[in-house]
Structures are given as structure tokens and as C-alpha cells.
Image 1 (cartoon, helix red, strand yellow):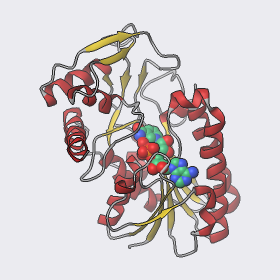
Image 2 (cartoon, rainbow, N blue to C red):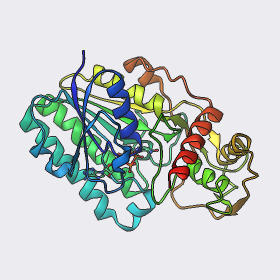
Image 3 (spheres, rainbow, N blue to C red):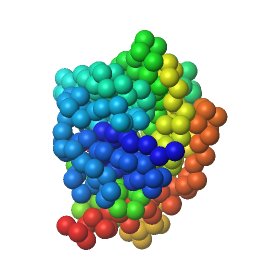
Length: 322
Ligand SMILES: NC(=O)c1ccc[n+]([C@@H]2O[C@H](COP(=O)([O-])OP(=O)(O)OC[C@H]3O[C@@H](n4cnc5c(N)ncnc54)[C@H](O)[C@@H]3O)[C@@H](O)[C@H]2O)c1
């Protein structure tokens, strides 16, 4: 059945791809985004756009909305360490205002973008949802605080909610892709080297206890991630807060990613080894068993070369347009 959905942060990377998927599934989409890190042109054609802040969501929410998909947040780990107040204000206080507006308007379904950063340094990989949460930076802590807030909202006020804890999102879908500024994610950074926009890629530490000494991460295609959001909308049950990790369950090292970019782009990609960064776990790999079981999620784009190829196509398209 088609519905009307508010997508906060729908001018950003993940939100725009999910908004596009909702439109393709026949839903009505309203994007609410203050363009603090997003782009007006990122909002998919066919979605209504409100330039505004989640703290003011009460102005626009009413009972005609079937659910809110909440992507709007700040998400730069390094910045969160030097400006923690910015993260508590936007991610936590902003979401509190949004939840209040949803309660007032009688909108009782939520899908929230949580993160692997809520776990911190894992004791075991793959990471399951019952693993201890011990974030190593204010960004992860702000997302964990929101997860706790949602649990209470579901128990006390009947919200039906799903938090999706993304691992490393990558790739592109149609007109939508990744263009963070500043960029902090590995794949787009390596692609910038291929485009001649930076001289070399920095490898932060090559003495980790991993097969090649570099950090291992779980990369998930943004379109597979979008599929999970549509499934989460169906799974959201009043009074319950379901938390699901989203990753492919397979780790790739920084060096494997760089090598894959070399193969996809044909560029030699010089690398420079730099000191480890504080708070970077050696390996972050998801167990996606809960998402498969509870949502019926079945990712179909797990191949790293395919993920990189889609990101490369998007990066070249953006460069041509600039
Ligand atoms: N990209 C990843 O690898 C990744 C991994 C884990 C979790 N996440 C989470 O997924 C969500 C989306 O990430 P992204 O990579 O698309 O980020 P993004 O910065 O591209 O998108 C966030 C969007 O939210 C908007 N926004 C921020 N604060 C707002 C506010 N107060 N009111 C209205 N709009 C606001 C921004 O303008 C932007 O368009 C974030 O919540 C992030 O924490 C992302």
C-alpha cells in the first residue's frame, strides 16, 4: 500500500537514495532538510522539498504522514570530538523535538539511521546487536542516546520504530551519490586520488592485528541499505523498538579497498602510511542475521568492485557537472 513519508535529511547521501527508492515504490515523499550538509539538487525529482530544520518539524507534520524516516544529523567523527556540543544539539536535541512533533501529530512509525559507531571497539566480530555499546566519540554517543530515547518513546507512547545501525555505506544509485564536504569516507577519498584531486591516499596505521595490518571495515551498497529501509517500514510495530545492524558480514581492509579502486579506475593510486588515528577499531564487521531474519533483508550488491564502480561513475558525473 502506498503512503506518505517525511524523509528528514533527504538532501543528503543516504536520505536521497532512500527517498528515490520510496518514490519508485509508489509512495509520496516529503523531504525536510536544512541543507547544512546536503544539496538541493540531491533531492530526487518527484519529492516535495521543505527547506527547514528538524527542530521545527511540528510546523509541517500532521496525521497524513504514515511514518518518518530520520536521516538528518551531523556525522563527522573527528568534528564531534572537538565540537561535541554541536552533536548533542543537532542529533540528540533535534531528534527529541522531532519525536515530540511526531507524538503531537499522531505519526507513530519511525525508521532511524543509527550507526556501528554506537558499539565502539568491539570485543568480538562479527558484531551482533546484543554486543556492549561503548562509543569512542561524541558522534557515536549521540546516536546511542537517540536509540535509548526511541526505546523509551516506543514503550511509553506506542511508537513503532526500527533503528538501522549502518556500517560503511558506499556506492551510488542513479542520480544520487556521496558528496560529503569535507569527505571523510575511504572510497570517495581514494576516488579523489583517481580524479587527480589529491596526490595520494593516507593509510592510517598498517600495524593493526589484521591480515595486511590495515583496518578492516564492512562496506554496504547504499541501494541495499535503501531496500532495508522500505522493509523496516513494514516491520515497524507499535510499542516496539527493533535494532538491526546493516552490513554485508564481510570485511575488507583499507589496502583491499585501494587495490579495488586501482582495478576499477586503472589509476595507480599512490598511498602514504600515516600514524594510527585515535579511536579507530582494527575491525568492524556486522552480523546482519537480525536484519535478514526480522526484516527479510537480502542484500544483492555486496561485491566490492561493483560498489566501487558505482561510486566511481557518480564521482565522474559530479566532476563533469562542476
Ligand atoms: N554515510 C555513512 O556511512 C553512515 C554510516 C552510519 C550512519 N550514518 C547516518 O546516516 C544518516 C545519513 O548520513 P549521510 O552520509 O547521508 O549524511 P549527509 O550529511 O549526506 O546527510 C545528512 C542530511 O541531514 C541534513 N540535516 C542535518 N541536520 C539537520 C537538521 N537539524 N534539520 C534538517 N536537516 C538536517 C543535512 O543537510 C544533510 O542533507 C546520518 O544520520 C548518519 O549519522 C551514515
